[in-house]
Length: 328
Image (cartoon, rainbow, N blue to C red; front, top):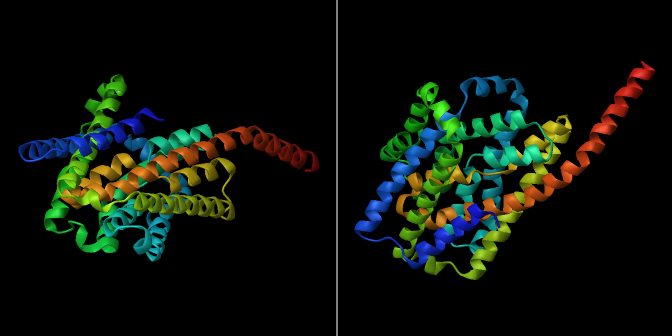
């Protein structure tokens, strides 16, 4: 098991056994808010504006990835609503819908694309654009699809701007002074990133424990959630693969579209859920955590297979070029 996934599961178990309450819950909640701001400040500091603008040349690829992330997934989430009353609680279905509006990820999409020998620079840009767009689109879609459960009032907008957007913009503005420091301390800051997310998870699950929300989630409900999340992932992978072929993308770009268009960001989604759902975020983030584990396992298998096929594809392409040159 991936150490980070093990840490997430351990954090959930800790929240179940020792949930923060009273003054401790207030202190942990404040620390989580600070951690979220720091997380997005680091995101802004890492993003190279020049690289992000340079990636706009492949606008067709990014358009397909964006359509998968913010159109296909929400449609799949709404379609799952027909089965949800029989398999899930209302809160878990809210979490499934929220999962469907979360932006794509950068880290795992890039790693999978690299393994499968796809277009890595395009994957970096696609994940980056999705995260930036998600700061605006995710709250809007969540408010539209989920409704009253989302804190999308004036106060909610201010919370999003204060905790997510402003720290990100500050990171961008200060990047010329912070980029070299971040480059020298990647490992330490990676631990800080993950520690911040673990703190968000602990806070959300602690609130759920103290409010008794977890008593509503039976093993049957968890298996139902896992089944629906797996179905959403399978349909996303199939649809992006089919669309990329029909639209005429080459092999490297198809790999990028499939992985960037079917993956969801745990690192971005968890802080967003904490801001949008507040004390009710506990059960809402569970579908995203399960989906994250599913996408890692399934996509790693696919990436490995595509990696082994890559030399064959390159050889076939070279032979076609030779034939074309000899007949021309």
